[in-house]
Image 1 (tube, rainbow, N blue to C red):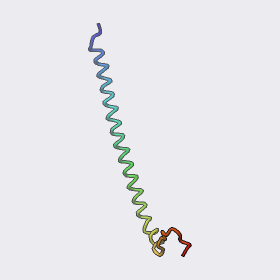
Image 2 (image 1 turned 90 degrees about the vertical axis):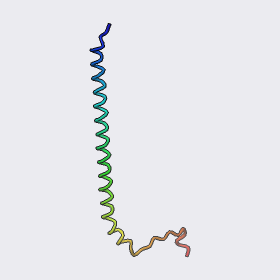
Image 3 (image 1 turned 180 degrees about the horizontal axis):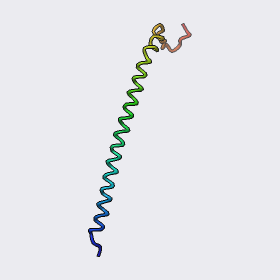
Image 4 (image 1 turned 90 degrees about the horizontal axis):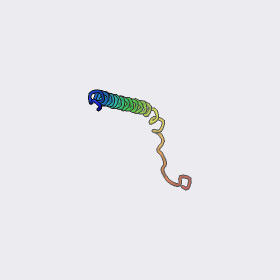
Length: 72
């Protein structure tokens, strides 16, 4: 007969380890998502800061969306 105490201890250790790993993975995912959000915000801010200069260059021109621009 196998006593349940020793096996139960290992099973409990496995369950505890699995729970710790799951919690660590969740925290890691949260951290990586936050970093991705911050990178996206920084990219948008950089794009917004660059756009006034780009808009000033394009202000005098209006894009021509006609299909056949050369056939006037």
